[in-house]
Image: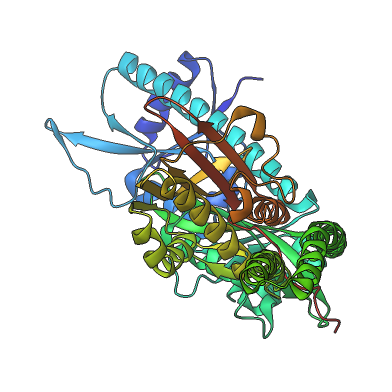
Length: 498
């Protein structure tokens, strides 16, 4: 059976003319009562409805008033506009799907109807495809195991407008309890977490971020929530919403915390064994030198022995001091600006830098916080700056380049610290040894612990350290690059039990 086109006109002449045109283009005409409602006409399953302007306006209003977002596509409404003495009399406040002017030759009427049907079918197909895609998206949102939340970026305080069933299961809060609230209700009293600094920065700068936060379920049970936050933009590029994907990573965070503790114990054990071995030699020297000083009859000779004792004791003190700084660590992660740690280190080292005839060139290209153990990262910066200054001091000075910049390493976003000097460089045979404990290129001036400790700290922060060095030519010197993720550590302790 051919598709039908409805004719809802009060003018019998219009009805006969339109009836003939519909048959001419191969469709079935269906005469409708103009007084009927849009709903009753829609039930006839016609593709188009042809009606005078007054009836068409009423049908459009009824359709718009009762329309539901997920309804099947409606028939198109074409308004019949009369033409008298060549003037179109049109009072059309409603947005019709099309307008047909009568009277006009039958061939033109048939041609206009063909175009209207073609346009309507093409639009209906696009609508149907869009509805199918929308239904698919809804099914995806409802079936994923991660929690999904959508908040409005155009309303004050970014209220939630949607959460999926997995969010309800994860948090214990229903859709009705969540809608209209800012998602901070999941934080309980934990409003000063370092990861929240990264979230606030991302929202202010309208960009994505990934953090781990301590959240609380409705029953008060704590859990670690890995939040991936992304902005949603309209056609003009304006951010209208933020979508968050929540994943319960409590098991992973607690495992990593336990692993970090075991690594600290392992490092401490290696450190203790190395220190015992390294200190044993100067202690034996001290014992022998004191013995010789006690039995010497020459005051000058005794002083010489005691000066050597003092030199050995200073070396022991240097080793123990470096070891104590390593073990005196932060207890909680903090959100810090890496450039601020760099500035503090350079300011505290100002006298040492000037004495070595070194000029500093610093450049800050990162203004985003990282979550880290502040004292540990400060120690890394201090070790790299001190090594560079010492390398140039032996050559009469030079330039020290210190830069921070945002980058991505193996798909993980973060900040890279670059420390470059114009020292003598590190021989190629030593580059693989510099991270070994007590290996030093400074002779008796260094402990050989700085780079070893620094590499251990960077690894615990899921970071990466690289070195390039040249011992001759115009590019002589050493460059260290330390990459630290924005979310370097998830937390300093496991979530408290409720």
